[in-house]
Length: 97
Image 1 (cartoon, one colour):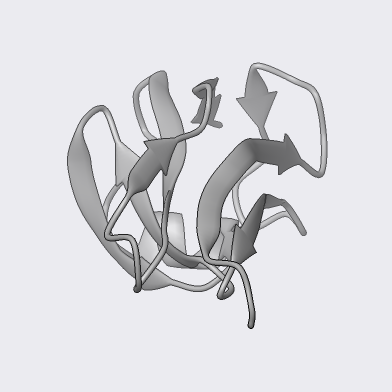
Image 2: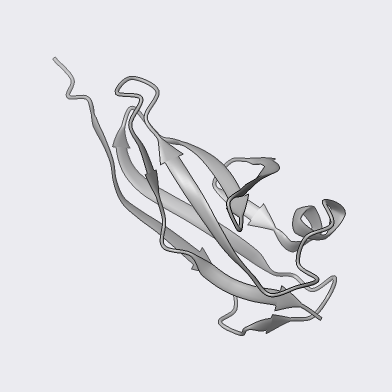
């Protein structure tokens, strides 16, 4: 019997810890969560959903969708397909220069 729980410990990690990220740089956000089965991830900028899925959100995707010009909060929401539970990460705040 396998246990179904989570997501727990939803953590977002920026690849750099600056409030100002150079445009077109090799920057990304990585989201992780403890979940069984594995969580799926949705990304948000100031409560607006981004067209991106998966554990990693790249700066290229952020810029292609017209975000990043103004300082804002980015977060990921991890969801467990079985429990339907969705848990947001703490936000990461930055703008793209």
